[in-house]
Length: 405
Image 1: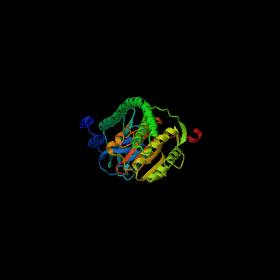
Image 2: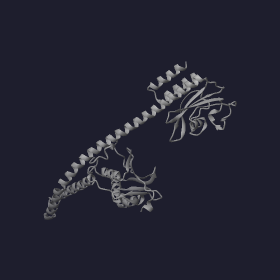
Image 3: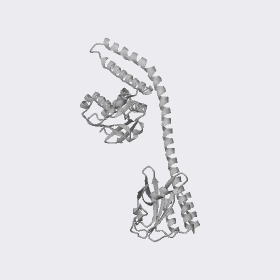
Image 4: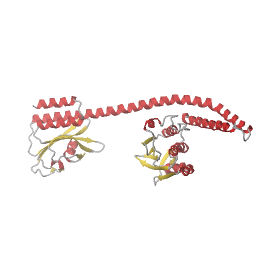
C-alpha cells in the first residue's frame, strides 16, 4: 500500500500537470495513507515572506489561506527545518506550546513536514485530524519520501518558470539586437545621404533665392520660386533631423531639477497652446526631483513629445503633464487627448522615417528615444485609441540634488 502511493506520486512528477494540480493529487494520496482529515501544501514566497496555500485535500474546516513566515506551525517548521508533530486535548484551543495557530481550531492532532532540499526551503505540507492520530514508523517514512517528491515538484516548477523567463528575455534581446543592426545600417546610409545631399541643396536654395530677387513683383514665376524655397527648407530640416539622429552625441551630464526643465520647455509652447486652443494641466511634484542629465538634449526630447501632442490636437484638447518619483526613478508623464495612435502603427513609432503626417520627417520620436537611452532611461507608451496617448519618460533619480550641484 505505502509503496503503491510512492509510485503514484512518482508518476505525478513525470506528468505534464501544473504545480497546483500535482500538489492537490499528492494531498489526496497522503490522506489515503495517513489518519488525517485535512492536508494542505503551503509554499513560501520569500519576497512577501508569506506561506501561501497552493493546494489542499480533505476538509475545509479552519482552512487558512496564508501564514507569515514565522507564524503558526509552518513558521515553526521553517525555524526548525524538521517535522513538527503535535497533540492537544482541547480541539477549541489554537495554542500549542506557545505557538498560536488559528488553523489548529477544531483539531487535536497535526503534523507538518518541511518541503526542502539541501539548499532551499520551499514550504510545508500540513496535516490535521480532529482525533488523536497515530502514525507508524513506516508511514512516517512514506511521508518523508512524499515530502521530498513534492519538493522536487516545486523545484522543477521554479526551474521551468526561470527557463521561460530567460527564454523571453533572450528573445527580447535578439529582437533589440536585430533592430540595432538595422538602425546601424540605416544610420550609415542616412549619414552618407545627408552629406551628399546637403551641399547641392544649399546651392539650390541660394540660387533660387537670388533668382527671386531678379523677378519682378508681379512675375507669374514667383509662386513657383516660393514653392521651391519652401521645399528646400523642408529638405534641409529633414537633413538636420537625420544628422541629429545618426550622430552619437555624447551627453554632458550635470545635476538638474526635472521640474525646472519641464517648466522651461512649456514656456516655449505657450503661444502654440493658445493658437490651438489646448488646455494645459500640470501636476508637478511639490518637491524638486533631482536628475543627472544633459539639459539641452533632454529639452529636445521633451520638445518632440510636446510637438507630437500639439499636432494631434490641432483643433483643441487637453495636455496633461506630471512629474513624480516611482520606484526610485524620476518620471515625466505627457498625456494628450488627440485620439491616440492607430494600433497597427504602434509598433513602428520609434522607427526612423516612419510617420503618418503629411509633412512629418518621422525622426522626432526616434531622436527622443535615442536621447532618453543615452541618459540610461526608458520610454513607455500608453495608447488609448479614440481618446489619446500618454508617453512616460523614466530617468535615473539623483537623490542628492543640492549637494551634487
